[in-house]
Picture 1 (spheres, rainbow, N blue to C red):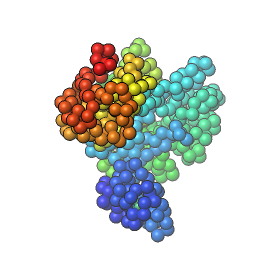
Picture 2: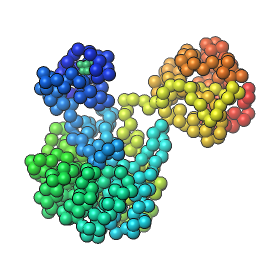
Picture 3: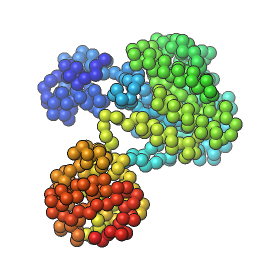
Picture 4: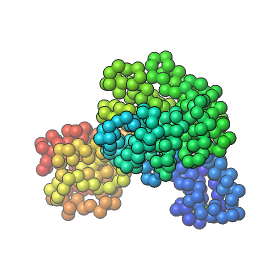
Length: 465
Ligand code: SF4
């Protein structure tokens, strides 16, 4: 396993030809380590003379935890692929995939409505949409035909990847016949049905979950058996026990599996499945069950659920889970930033104010949304502060009068000619830059409030200047 660009560089051709889109092989090596480029982007490496180096480097760059793909096309999800136990040591890759359940005894209209809700859900947050990833189709009827019909209706309603859920190989086979082109995940093989489910996974070439509740030896032995039979597209489910001390047992099992995998036990280095919907087994009312399901999902988003089957699609259950996932899977090495530029909010004209903020995404989108929701038409200048927020950027020297002047020049916006007021509004937390910005830009500088939520009120009192 290699972790540094220098080590990866030793395997590359070293010609700096630029075909990968980078100016040097060393720059490309750095992208290999942070996984923003693929080894096959270096086309010279595909030549015969480099075939051994290519193979060796591919093996050395492979993540400790195998990556498993579910679904096809744009909506396909990858799970696993991690190298570390602690996010701050590198980052976690492949966000926990969230599958929401439907079942084959649902009336058709309710089924279609629920699948549409799962498919359509999205919430804008810091420049991206938070969405749901998959549909888990559960067989409750025990009837292969009914299950297959349900899978067909789900496929007719969404192109999200599927999990086919039953311990009966006949039911799984019926579902696979309908979904064989969709690369669904099978759930699940256990110590009783493993032979038939392994045959199905191999015949249809699909990933499969191995289920062994609170018995890690059996889980490992199943994984070894499946690998020997010819498939490593495996997901491990050690059982999710939702109550009291059993939840602690679940937590311990997840830790043991991931620790062993990251520390080099290839036999068990697979993505892990959590099933928070088991909360519904122990709670006697729907709100408590949803609440507890979200608590369990949050725990195993942090440690180390790679894919989950969930039930609650109420916003109060979904939103905390989606936000915690977004936070845990944000790369801690890179500040979340927007492109430094002059943005228009609403339909500004020459009389509209020109406001300054930084290109830290959370700051930018908060300010932008406060202005847009209050229907303030303005120009909003996101200055390049390396993605750092206003207060820290002023203290650290990333937001200076010179940077603001450069931002103005780079944008091509001419304060004197493009506005009637030649005025800049600084954020309150950058008040101490007021004099310097006036000197550097020759513009009039006003200081706005420290909190962008107060901007609309501030505008009413202070604008036009
Ligand atoms: Fe180096 Fe390969 Fe990139 Fe060429 S394509 S610069 S050889 S890494």
